[in-house]
Amino acid sequence: MSGQTDTHPLISRKPRSYAWWNAVNAWLLLLPAAVLLVAFTHYPILATIRHSLFVARRNGTEVFVGADNYRAMAADPIFWKALINNFWFALGTIPTSIALALLMALWVNRNMRGRGFLRLAYFTPTVLPMIAVANIWLFFYTPDYGLLDQLRGLFGLSAWNWLGEPSTVMGCLIVMVIWKEAGFFMIFYLAALQQLSPDLEEAAAVEGASRWYTFRRITFPLLMPTTLFVAINAVINSFKLVDHLVIMTKGGPSNASTLLLYYIYEVAFTFQDSAYAATLTVVLLVILSTLALLKFGYLDRRIHYQ
Image: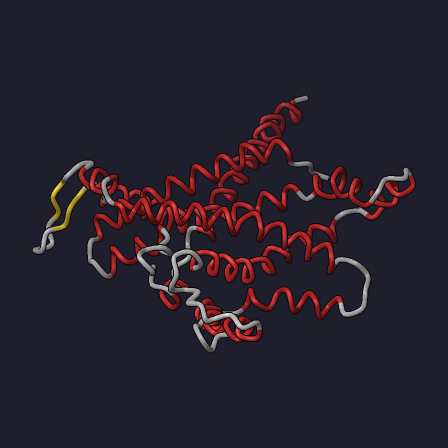
């Protein structure tokens, strides 16, 4: 009995020591990612918010101005123009890119000849550098000798300055971005489709369900986690276009293709107004955060996990 009473406290303390050690190991494993997250995400966000409340003088000092930068932004017509342009740009690229990616994934997921070549062809635009993509599409849009104007010439139509007209410049950018991003999103849908059990479609076929009904009631609901991930990435991509604008339009004509991040870039590096650029950046962060929360809140209730 005495031996049992001596060892009993050790036995009772052993699980506690293991639990403490497991907690320490867990925090040590999380520490590198947490340090990087704080250093390169949380701290820059807080620093940007602080910087938006100041104005820098020529001697390097800062003067606190409160919400003056935000009031100047509210009265800035170029900001509102860039914001409206970004809204239409996102509306044109996000649904179309996701729908096209899903269609391509369904197509190349079938058993057919040349499936590997089709997958490569769809994915190739994704691996091209952004500057290269902009120069490729300049060949399509250049007046007179661009491919589009050469095709128009076959029908006796005159040349058109696709990137120089406010009525067509945004549509040209939307088409280019869809061409580049749809193949990237297709990879995620293709991976998700290959994880679905074929027994589900076979059971639906036995019950006499059509392909459309099977897709609408079985396949697409099971793809909702992938759709949520793709939608968040598509929203972020629609607000971070800079490289193509620098090469192709520089925000013109008359700011018709100026997007919010490009305007931030222009204010920060061309006009050298870092405080106002920080103010615009805060607005961009608020927009992206709000859209992400809305998407998680709306789509999360419609996700079906296997």
